[in-house]
Amino acid sequence: MFVAFIAVVLLLTVPLAGGKLSALARIRLRGKWLVMAALGVQILITGALQSWPHGVLVALHLASYGLIGIAIWWNRRLPGLLIIGLGGLMNGVVIALNDGTLPASARALAAAGTDLQKDFNNSAVLAHPVLAPLGDVVATPAWLPFRNVISIGDVIALVGVAVLVHTVCESKLTAPLRRRFSGRAQPPAESAAAATL
Image (tube, helix red, strand yellow):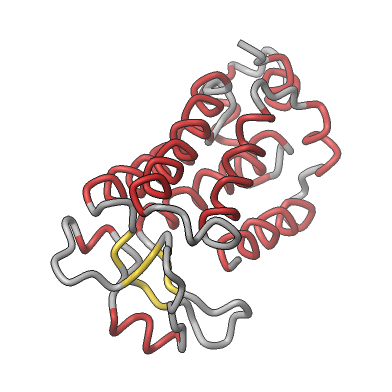
């Protein structure tokens, strides 16, 4: 929930930086249904399907990351999307190496006041985590809503979201990048909207 909140905040910064949120409507994404299916799976495995066998839940969890990865690859020409993919890949690899769970820091959880008591969690304190520093080890600031713990992969993905929305919406923050890499041949929003691969 915290990551989604920050993504919304990043959207709200676009008009403040002189960008136009309406440009996002011109983007044509391939495989949107894959992303929706993946999110649905992640909601179900930490909710209604928690009583299913652990191996099945792990397989579904990893499959959800695979679906999102396919969608990102199909739309990889959109600015920032490969950065989002890198963050997701980091989380996915760590989850795969830890039997379907992203390892969490007990200290970070205590600092965030988060208690994970579900049968199957996409994040949990593990006895012997692999690549623990890449897990949920950062407690979000107390003054922000939806306090939680996040991973480095989450932070990288949010950087990708910022690049995506500010570039596509042509905010002043990305003007130097647009001049350098697009040659000003056509506005990035139009280029991004045409990138259907």
